[in-house]
Length: 80
Ligand SMILES: [Zn+2]
Image 1: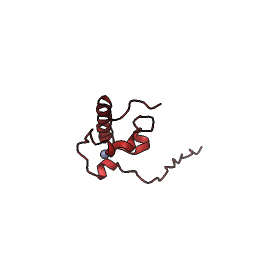
Image 2: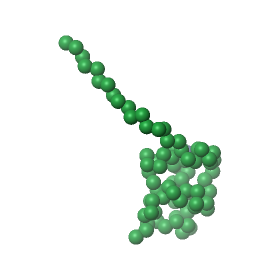
Image 3: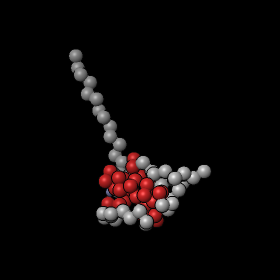
Image 4: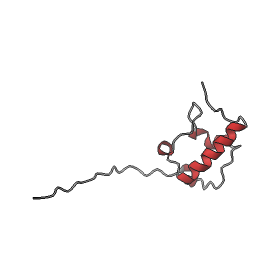
């Protein structure tokens, strides 16, 4: 009996590079809302990294910055 070889097709998508890595951001300033404004949805949520292409390291930074900015009312917790 012949074994069927399963061919796993990988989508050859363009690899998305983290925009923060491109800018060589080491420290994300939470006061600089304009820098990460586009990683927050219009409802005030942080865009998941699978959608934004941000790497794990910068996603962590981003999340920390967003949370900090929320507590001092730079960005809203939720938008209704
Ligand atoms: Zn990055």
